[in-house]
Length: 236
Image (cartoon, rainbow, N blue to C red; front, side, top):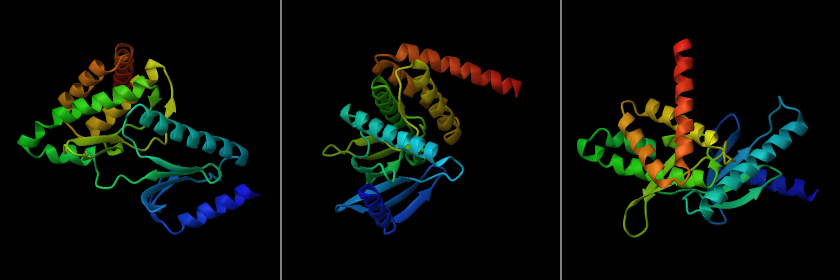
């Protein structure tokens, strides 16, 4: 009974926030929580699923997302702070990364200027380092795109800080193939969003290989997945 009351209070609170977007799995809101700018992610019920199965799957996804975020932060990887989790309404209250922009927008802007284009090599290296650290912690993001990476000015030195967001499809796995697929998803999204930047993605992989303690097996699996993808394209 108490849990139902708590959940009802959370849902009433969401009604006072601004809905940012709604996807197939969740609604995302923006507002304040305990006086701090916050993003709230609500995983809603799926009417097409059996209620018991839906509750089990939704709970598992919420747990996996929070676990991945906390594991990353513990490893020194910049992600939004988790303020609060309500497992009854399946809501995660997160830090709103104020003053940030997506890596997608940054790359697209930099590609318009020859001078700024050169700075993208440093960004690619930083991306490779961060993803290597994430995979060394056995966190699989599941939806790596340049839209799910943010940049904001770091404290003091003004150097750009890279943050990873949207761990809704994440899970924990030590398997090199899962990490290789994670990189493959990023590669497909990267080259689709930023055409003719193959050399930039290769710079990212070079940095990843130099930074990860387990990169050899992961890159090997990435190449296997690439080969399977090419074969499917030829058949299609």
